[in-house]
Amino acid sequence: MRKQAKGTGREARFAQLYNDAYEDLLRFVQRRAGPDQAEDIVHDVFVVAWRRFDDMPSESSDARAWLFGTARNCLLAEQRIHHQRGALAIRMAAEAEAFVASPDDSIALQLDIATAWGRLTPDHQEALALTAWENLTSSQAGKVLGISAVAFRVRLHRARASLRRALGNTTATTTTDQYSATEQLT
Image (cartoon, rainbow, N blue to C red):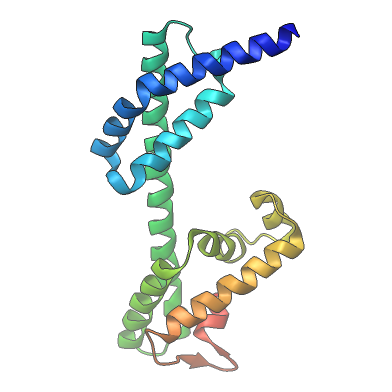
């Protein structure tokens, strides 16, 4: 019974902190990341706050400052992810050069791959990256994503199909020996 009272106090304190800081955190994040990402990032801040509630300062003004520090860290993490996705798209496009005969075709294929990559969902990008760039097996990649190997293979199949469709919308088919460039990249 005492534990329940402690939980209720924790929930009440968290709710009060949320009500007091949400709007200020939202404005803080919007100024740095834009309105389209701000709510998601602030949500992440409060998830971290709930998980690390016992580590948070007990004084409300200190807790508020702690939330702003956490928001900054979430913003930095989001920027790293965005940068990594862009870098991966560039590396994939650069690798395409091995599959074409002329420099003009190479440039066109690089642009097509970069465009197609941008059309993929983050889940599909991650599935392709784990296999093509990290050389992980389905079982290993599934563990990275917290899903079974079978679920990962399904996701990879869908990702490859999405990439092929996206490339089909941007290019004429570039082929070598027995495989199209799309199949060799994935």
